[in-house]
Image (cartoon, rainbow, N blue to C red; front, side, top):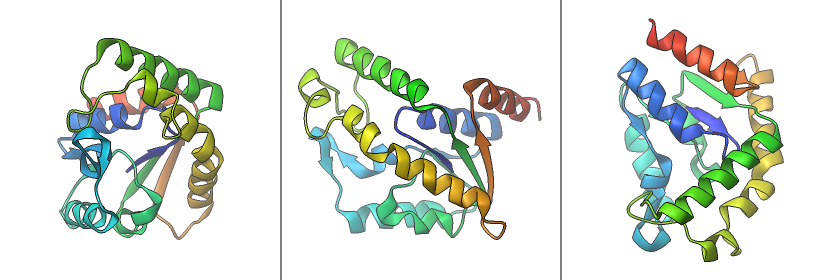
Length: 169
């Protein structure tokens, strides 16, 4: 499971891990949002995640707090992206701007818009709301010797080196 703050590159890394290892990877946003940004009911989200995690092998690009215990009970490795706020925030802003301009569909045909970027549901606002909680969560996991194995990457270079080692295996 890849875990990190909003904008850290979780989906890109999960996809790359899947490609490097041959494991099936799953975009959580595709499982939790339908067209027109309609959020899938919590119990349906949990069931979708449970079905994936009951499988023999998988990669998730994150885990939402409301069903976090499902993948945590099965995960063998957590790859945590512990990048500085400025780094993940600038990535997020650039990605959001690019998506607004190119109108490329994301998760189930949804598109980012300027209106959405400045709304109460803004992904950029979410970055600020969730940053400390997510970092605290994976630091707590890393400090627990009885928990799943966790690798914390503090820079994109560290992450890239590790990913290249998977590709050469």
